[in-house]
Image (tube, rainbow over all chains, first blue to last red; front, side, top):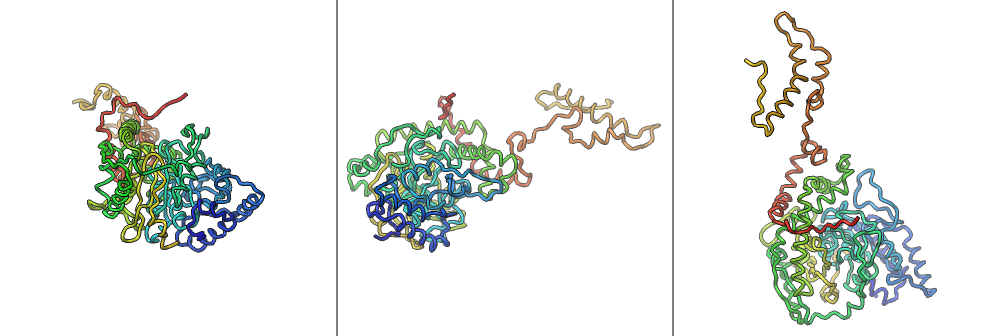
Length: 450
Length: 117
């Protein structure tokens, strides 16, 4: 078995020992990560953990679905054995050395947390310096879970954990060509994740297959009394459902406003091909519009900025935000300019948008569209080319992802093609997890710098 | 000719404001005027009490009313003056989106905020 891009499912089915895969990944990280910078730190006893996992296997014991599988975890999840920085170098910031709920569940299922992947500072941005995109190191990986996207795409770990407030799992997953799953709000506990915006933040995996995303969701989903937003809804058998899904007869909605009209033509072409593929397999495609999406940006701006300013209130009042990087400092300080009335109005608007989306789902099973309007921008590029001219890179990169944070819906991004420069393009699927679309092209292509 | 001519005609509460300004004038300006040179009273240094009063910021002088600073007192953020313009410029596009949201009539919509005691 070629271990470079093996999925969790491959490793489990192939009974690859924990030591074998860990040594292999550590070697790849040593060779490749000096140019990708996806990990901020590695766990010092990775091989010892792998030897213990293998000893348990030899003794006939398995801790769970992820026994002996190395996983990367974003640097805004607290971990007991590795320091957490949330991407900041501001002095006086220290986070507890304790496991977040997700870290705990991963370990309980047998996973080994191999290292912390870099995040844009406080999960506030889509660049994630100094991480590079493995498909082209002159380009950004996206963010804020940029390290997780780069590491999973480059075969430095079979999967990694990210967090998503306005698109921070799906953006790097799309730009780096991995699967990225943002589950329903409340599906996975966020206890022990450094907060960004309490009503928007989500935890989820970046993987190299939908089956692996389902596997990780199976391990991570479920009630947690330590996270007030965590749902007590029963956890279905995602892995079994994966084999039961059929595209024939699937009702597919395509939101033609907001999600189309301003994308790069290469993106539109790949996404339209994917939509046509669904139609060719027997899905019923229906175009819809959601006019109220024109108010979405104001709503999420108000919520995200105000929430971030509230979280960083002590730093704001003491002037310590001057130690943040310029872009993050500006965003955090701007949160103070959002009025209370605007914040509440944004929350009222979310109800309107939820009702609009519910009407779509009354006649559809999934919503399809692009994840990103562009492929990975170059490092330092402040504006990107879109259909009708130029757009701010920051505005463009989250334009198509934030609607599903506002509405709390689950959304997954799947690789669906490449632009002429060989950069990946993502297809975004919202609603019930959809499992069977892994395009053949993706199975045979890997990043140039991995 | 009146010794003092105070006008607050355009203030929303002119009488109240006039009373406040008159009180401040008596407490802050009169001691200073009384120390000025006049016929039969040669120039001399202002009394130490007057100097000390003048050294205080207006809001902290007797009868002074604090004038709230929009950034520190209202918004709760201590931003250096030279940075305020940068912050407002960066917020302008976001502000435009929020103004668009304000245009919606959502009177009958209960927000997605649930308080559970």
